[in-house]
Image 1: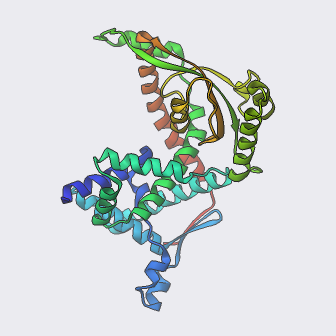
Image 2: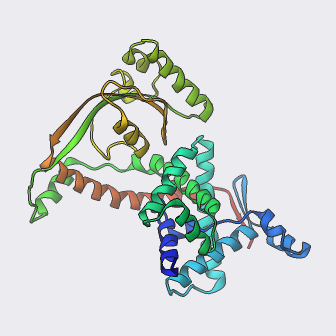
Image 3: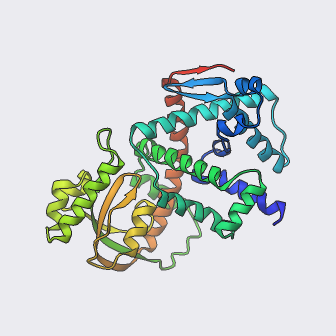
Length: 338
């Protein structure tokens, strides 16, 4: 395997979830550092460089991240700023990550192994590799598959927090979409036909008083009631935490590709009409899904409008994300000890 291929793998890893590259550098456990360090060195490496609310960032973790950033810059032929300057920038990025991960923990947000494996496999496939080839490539680039999995899990947790906190802040009016659509020229107007699925679901959310295990148990209870013949709409009204659909018996109406989170969409796609899923984990909790109908819909004009709406959303979401990150950083207790 060539070095060019190896470096392309690193670039892909560092782009997971659309978060800045500094977010994805690996962290070597302190125990691994201690095995090869003299006592005096161990004390120096393991000192606290930042206190973040009720968490800490250690010197060894910062050193590991710095090494990753330096290797990344070298692979791209770039030069880094002066040592202290880049070190402070990297530490600030780590502080911001720690705040978001604490928010994920407080909200009982988790990433199960199925979701994680799917994401890692997707990264490997995007590099035209098998999982074994991918593991060899990241090891050749100074990492391990275990550390990559840990980094991907952290990214997925932060992405879920960002989706919850930032997504709700972005509102796009129909008039904005109409204005941009009228400004665009050269639209072909070719027919666009996409699949639609009419589905309903029961959502059991994770809350500060309901952890992952408890939420899954409640979803399994709902699934068991349906298996015993209870009416789906009745169970949804009694148990579902999705206020928007619960009163309507869990009915989501017609759903198109991309309108639901990937875990939900994948599970829904694999169901037959009138089939009920096992509990499905998503960033919002556990879903029990039933597919009611499927159809093909001509959405030529609507597809163009949705494309524009997504472009506007992405631009504004990026702006809101930056503002939100500045807000949570200012509200956190941070004691930097460089």
